[in-house]
Each structure stands twice: as C-alpha cells, then as structure tokens.
Length: 252
Image (cartoon, rainbow, N blue to C red; front, side, top):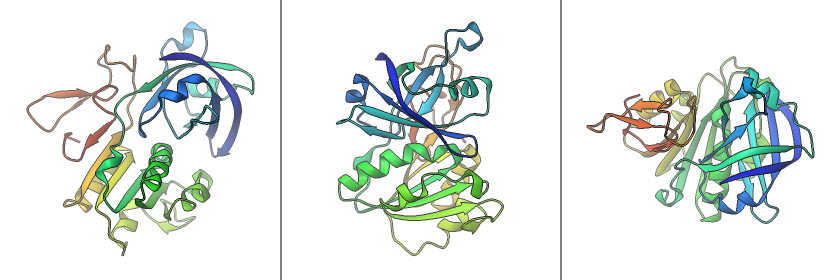
C-alpha cells in the first residue's frame, strides 16, 4: 500500500541515528515484525529511488509507525530534514518478516548497529506471546547506542561495543559465548559478517536472519538486491523473498 504519512516527531537519538514517528492508516496492515517500508525522500530527480528502512515499532491504536535510520548518505541526510507536520510518501509493509511462532520458550535477539531497530517490534510481539527474550546488541561505541532502556523493559539486555567504551568490549559473539541462559531460537539482523559469525557460534540452534541490502524498487522487479541461496534455487531477492530467511538458506 502507498500512503502519505504525517510526521509526528523526528529526533536525533544517537550519533547520526534518527527516530522518525509517522501517523497513517497504513499501520493497520503492519502485523509482522521484520518487514520494511520504502520511503520516497522528496520530489527531486536527485532521489528517484526510494530508501528501504526497517519497521521499528507499530502502535496500531494510535496508528503510528516508528522507524530508526542512520543519516549517512545523501538520501537519508535529506530525509533527516523532515519536520513535524510534513508528509512522507511510504510504500509498506514490504518483505517477509520474522516468524514469531518459531520461538517456544526463550528467544535470543541479536542486532548489530542499524540492524537493531526491527528487533524491537519483534521483542514486543514475542513478549505478548509469553516468550522470554534476551537481547544482545552491538555498536561501534557508546555514542552509537540507542534504545537500550526500551529493550531492557522487554527483557535481559547486553551491549557490546567494538571500542570497549560501554558494555562488553568486542562483538556480539563475545557476549553470546558467555551467556548462561538457555534459548531455543535466535533472531538476528545486521551486517553479513556478523550473521556469519553468529551462525558459526550457534550451529545447533534454530535461527532466522535478516539481511541489510541496498534496493532499487523494493518489490522484486529490478533484481538489484539478489543474494546467492545455499541450495539449488540459485538466487533470491532480499526485498520479496526476504529480508528474513531461515538460518542456512543463504550462501553468506
């Protein structure tokens, strides 16, 4: 569906990380965590392609959508100028999300950088089903951390920073190796190298991975976001076959 959503609030919450809250009827169709929206930055020909941004939080009662994004390119920097009351052209919800029904008792949620936001809506929905959630979130430094308190309100939360300025020094895998809690399922979103390392650390745990990828159309027509599958199917499209896949389905 396409809608011009109204900006409710737009704030800088960490280094180059913005929290964008929008209002619109389209939120009624956002049921599955891990899906994404395709945002048109403006009317200029400079930004002809939309920008894919994950869905962080949906409030169906208030009809609001929250997206967190990093403003590090021309398009996202232009988006960061949007003000309260402005309207933004949205295509949503897109892609296949996380299967919340896969978790049985306890789920491990692992996010890296801008791969953290979609895990928040996922954790909310898992909590609503009575599933215990453990969060392991990785960032470059303390200045890059966001939503720590929000995740803590949903369950046990661990932070890793590459430079050691906060939490565990190192990577999310360093935290996972020392976890004492038992979990039956893991969900993760972040850079490919992080996902590969997680699959190696958790070879016997059922898991689901969400890939970050540059996209053109977002609806499977342009083939700009293909990824090699680890089977006879050849290639898959991140935008329509994913962005969430079962562990082992992709040749990372």
